[in-house]
Image (cartoon, rainbow, N blue to C red):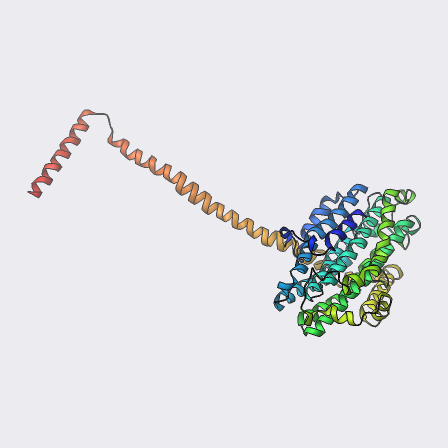
Length: 454
């Protein structure tokens, strides 16, 4: 709870809060999963209660502290960014790719923590698209609500891992609803907020963000904004699919764990359940309470300057009639229905007819392998950039260090001195007749030279 409140305090404040330019560019969108999972999941050591609290906290802090402080600074840089349609389009494209393709990675994950973590990366893409669409307040608003329900989901995942005696594979869970009632209901709240279920905090921030991007595409006729809008809309379905795939496999269906684990299943202690409840409350209501202030009020008036002609929130503000009417308005758009479709699809595939998932996996092995290998990003970074850099360094070492510096300069100079010494040493024989002979030869040569000159 404290982590979420700290996030809100740090990143939903007006201008006075943002004065740390050192955070720029700490994490780009598309390479985020590489360092993120190396940090969180190396050797799967984040398994204890403290470790899950630490892991959730660190993820949110790294996410908010680097990536989202970067977003906050980009929002504060609106007067500069607004001058370049290229910069805005670039932000939109990067965010769109991240939002959709990181969500796809969450669909095939079986580690409960990884599902939530890839969800985090996908939501970062949503925020970035909002920045590229000049809907800066919408991006920061989603950042704030996301702090609550994502911390809730991470802590709920930790609660499940505790109950499962450190098992993290959702394929080995199932039926935990009756054993972990607090974790179940708080996880449901977090999942509903994540997919944008009406009246939850995630609904207000995500739906407003998507509508703002769509309005921006209409105002600017930007191809990038249009692509961003449809990527986010399709991403809603993907988000609902992987979120409730995890939820159904963990809490519903028949138990799939071993008998020993099943016998010892029980709810987590109060040190976990109380923060879960405290995080669930703002995950439900903070969006309803703050959307008007943050998006259509005067909260960012002195902090973020946007070109009025391309500001989608101004257009949305003219049609704003309150948070309840916003729900009715959202029913006319595709996003909310796609989230319902994602939940229904997850229920049918992983609860009603599980063979569909296996058959689809078998038929789409190529696609599955690409997703399983994270679009071969590790190969690109490790074997590509890092490997190429290592080979370049090795070549420079062999040529520059071994051959030039050590071979030519250091060892070469020593060899040259040794060679010259060897030659000169032959002239110093130590015999008197040799020196007399050399003197005679030299004197004869000198006299011959003088005669020739005369």
